[in-house]
Image 1 (cartoon, rainbow, N blue to C red):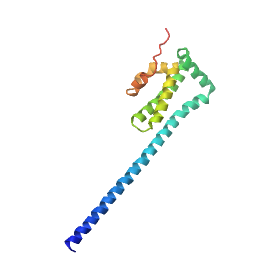
Image 2: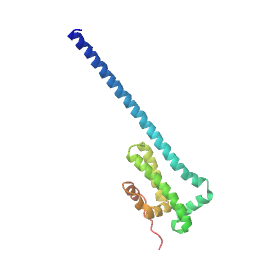
Image 3: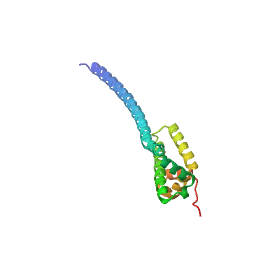
Image 4: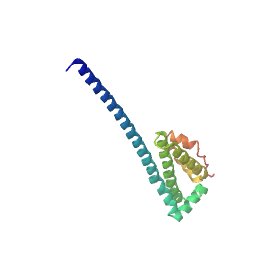
Length: 161
């Protein structure tokens, strides 16, 4: 085989190798994009999985719905037992908010989803004296940056004298 023919064959092999690399990179980019979509879908599913049972607790139990209404309106009028039930409900609610906060911080959920969820939690906590009492008593268990985010939003409710 002549030197020029060998060089020509080597050049063709290099072009084929370069094309193979480009095709591989495109394939990997498509795989990463598909995985990102799957991750976002899974995150939304996780949110529904942890968020909907909270709604089901209220919808499925009129007695608990009445208790939660009482805790929201007059959180310090609840008995210890009543408050304990509300307190754990509020903890689950804030835990969902915290979960979504960190999913947003990691760029896993779409910003539009986070904006809507955060707005919901802001309105809920501002309207709920029970969540405000919960935050006053439990805020130290939620570390920054979420703790600071929630503390900047949730009004500080004072216990009765």
